[in-house]
Image (cartoon, each protein chain N blue to C red):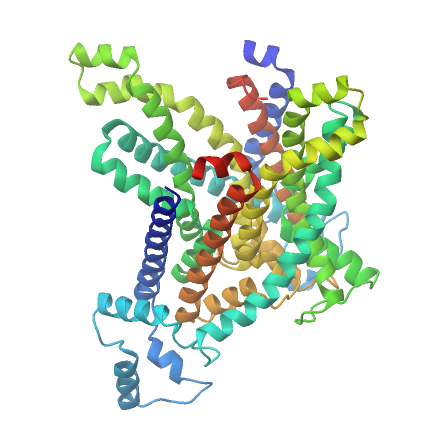
Length: 313
Length: 271
């Protein structure tokens, strides 16, 4: 039963990966520019037609489109995503380099998100329809409607330039440099999160077991921390998983604003330089990571929710 | 009209939306200066009585550019949402009503689009095709229709076996007339609600792509692009990045509020 589910899930993921990579491959194939020329040309050197043809044959660029795709996909299965034109380095190296930066940023952001949204969301739920609730909801609405890159620029201007608390445009992974980008992302995500935390807690607070606990004279604090929180963990993990996927793929704008050496920043530059192998690798890599995280979230359910474990056996 | 009388808040937000739409339509007549006309004598002027929000690196009036930018942002976002709704509804109705292999193929495709972060592919598509207004809309359309297709399909599945559809079938109504007269009218309210709630989000994504350089191109007065241009002058001319962002924020906020209240009016079951 569980094996069957796993196989169907994995095959679905595989189909998605093939589809997404094929789509990107089509795009890069149709786009203008000769990859062989781009790989060889560095600066103003002029490359002879002979060398061009030779490189094209070496890279398999003279083959029909489908053969090229199959060759590329075969390489990916062996961990070879081709060479980046702009960096003259293997794509996998470039991806891992950028991914390290993005991963660090994502981890710090998630910590901030939890620190901001959990207390505020719970506070808002406990004081439902009170002034606290309205305050939190208003602030979270403002946060949702604010473009992240604008908030980032304002932070950069105020805290980086005017107050000089944080370095600007360092292009390196530093503890000081991570605060502003992580805070910007965290404020935006928390605005969405607070509402969801609030909804989850409101739902739990109306359950019979809470009424029962109150009837037995337990303090509100004990009910919240000992009984409600453990039950609210499960839906929160789904949300968290989804936002981690978003963080790992969709933060190009913030990485650009703060010159953060992450994978999004790298992808934007790769697109500007028409570095097709790197773009293909980027889209594939992000899709893999995103789906892997979603799968992990699904799996964590089985372990965290005893009811599901029973069903699975 | 009774809708407005009974829902004061919705009436208020609708008024704001109408105001924005009017501003967008009449922007070229309202703008004090030509948004495209540079003046090298007036480069990077601080906000003043003459140039209410300052000027940019080419001496263009920021206030006029932001005002005219309303037209572009609104036009792009509305086009995009309409296209997504049409494509999504079409796919959802086809899949839900006809079922079979067509449903399998369409929904597998939709699942595929939902299984990975769309913005990554949107960046790749818009970037590779080359930044332009049309390519931005195309890129976001490719990655956003699937949500609507799923929604519409589930609605159609629920409708398909209801008595009035069965009755129409037995009476010998043509498939096309069942689709147009019975299925679509019942599906549209949810699609409109979802679409209205997505206008703000789409506006933000369009501005984001433009900010990255994969959307509208200079000298278009598009807000995301203006922020991108202003970014380089953050030290010397902060007004270049403050006001376009403020414009995005206000318009997105108004549309989000309006979308939420429209849902409350049309679909009062949800909280």
